[in-house]
Image (tube, rainbow, N blue to C red; front, top):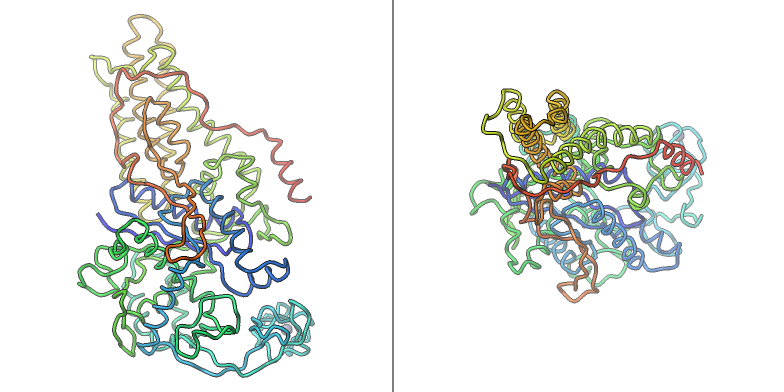
Length: 606
Ligand SMILES: [Zn+2]
């Protein structure tokens, strides 16, 4: 048994999330966490909403609310949507808790003490009317290279050159049109070059990563520059140094505080369980043995879209290593001890929608909530698992969603469940026994295929090959459907034939039960239903709940997502019990009318 941290990317709280977001990080991390728990590991799955930074400040200003009010609104929406998808977070919290502020400040101080945070005076753009840092992408002007008149401060979309906003001709703020002022301002920088060697050594020890992630991360190390970790902004975590702590105009930069969320959420989870040190088994090398690089018996898997790789394969490990005293400047770990670096960074590719990039502003979007108002969570989870952007950019089309739902989920798995249970219910009223004549070769063969699935499917999920894993589980379903067609138990109506009919149905129901367990990480809602249709009681697939909680340190109350995942099915074949009563089943999956394709396309155009 290992202690497994499932660290899931933090959605930014400036709006509801669409299905592209949850297919990149949400569903894959949940499939992994559910499987690992079923296989007997001790899993901690954490995340929350990322709530600081300029975009939230700008949007709040535009709506005439405070940044906190805006974050409150979307924190709740996002938590509810993730709950509706059945994502089994041990804790889904937020970055505006006092606990998070304290942990961010502890990491800042530790890195500062060890010499990895250095002050530097730079020239930066500020908005003259607010005094706030104006990030590069909020500045627009004429490109000094090609003359394009809407070049952004960080790059020109016309000639593709990287730019410095100070070089733009006629720079303007995209927020309010004013001309930015370029002023000298003092900020703190993370000394990434001092951590590059340690990062390179660590990356050299990584095994099993997707090759593109490893290659991309190694390349980043060749050109590491010190990176600003503070901004001129009022919305964020205060800088925990004398002379800075009380300044209202300087804050820690959002990227720095957000990645620390994995750690602060783990600490918050532990404090809420009543064992405030419980987070350490996922984060500190065991008993101080080994280095933070090896992690001892604690494993940490980080799930995100590919645009976030740099934060998880370079910057977050740099923070952890620097805090632990493992870079070129050495140093001592702070009070949190030496902290484990990621075991693996699991990044997904992009999902597009009907051939286009998701875009809320251009309305190329379907939000999780709208999707779940019209379709079932497991229908979406199935599509993401079987056709999601695991290792290639992939396109979501309504026609393909309809086909996958109707031809595979309904006609394949749903049909197997439905016909085997209804035949047994109608002819026996219960799970029939195996005939004393015993099992035939065909019976044994099918049972063996299902049993073998526990190894095949499990190993694939553990190695983040979910698409292949669900394919293997669906092969078991296809084999069982073929078996039923070949054995044709419905023809065995005579009194003499009935024992054999019972045996066939017993075998089929055993395989339904096994296939249901194999599919549970992917389809937890329907897995619970199938468990009950087979006469099972109690929790088969535990579900998350939204709870209103008090801030542990006196801040305002907020909703969290949490759950008891110690209950539920194990990753093993459980013999079905002859004689257990069965009733005629209700369909587990809904067949969709083909007209939904045109309706959804009209909505998208509309
Ligand atoms: Zn240009």
